[in-house]
Amino acid sequence: SLLNPLSQMLIFTVIFTYVFAAKPLAGDPSGLKNFPLYFLSGLLAWNFFAITTSVAMGNVQGGAGLIKKVAFPHEHLVFSVVIAQFVTLLIETVILLVALLIAGQNVLVWIPVLLVLYGLWALFTAGVALTLAAANVFFHDVQYLWSIVTQLLFYATPVIYFAANIKLAALRTLGNFGPTGSFIVAFHEVLYDGRMPAAGRWLYIGGLATVSFAFGSWFFGRLSPRFAEEL
Image (tube, rainbow, N blue to C red):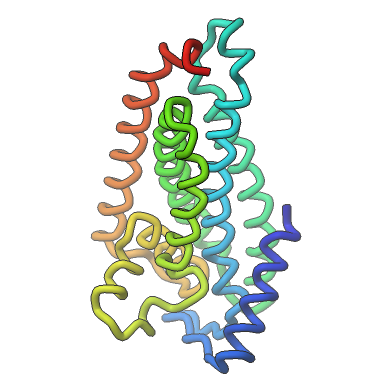
């Protein structure tokens, strides 16, 4: 699982640094100027979101035989994916933290804050995964459409670029406060900048996580009794 983010880091570092000859912004207040570490600080969390939502849909669809034969909470098919991918995220993060420490960034003091952010991100992701998994049972094209949406979301989220460098105000706002961008910016602030996200951002992402999970749970619970007849 580590090869995927590392290969993406290598590709985008070459494009960002050598093709576009762009220079990474210094972390504020860390002073860190390292594009690969900036990129990974957002990419690991992004991959957790993208992989979890995609695999969760397939897990529910592929569990048709189990759903028809055994009575159990169908949400477990989604939550098992969330937990598995979350463990992967934590393992990858340990390696990132070591790299940041080698680069001179004292990230150890920010681990408790990072874990809270990861918890909110997991809650948000679980809500999206529940919604998509339920919808995909009835409309099978959802899985294919979502693959397109995630590509668009990736470039609308400041994973490979610095939101502060965007000159168009509307796009800069989207990068900073879009549903996924708001979380990724918070990860960059903690890991790359070495500072606490503003209170407003905490309230915003906390609200996003709560609404996403509440709606996803309600939506999935409303449709799950009909899964057996649709699958």
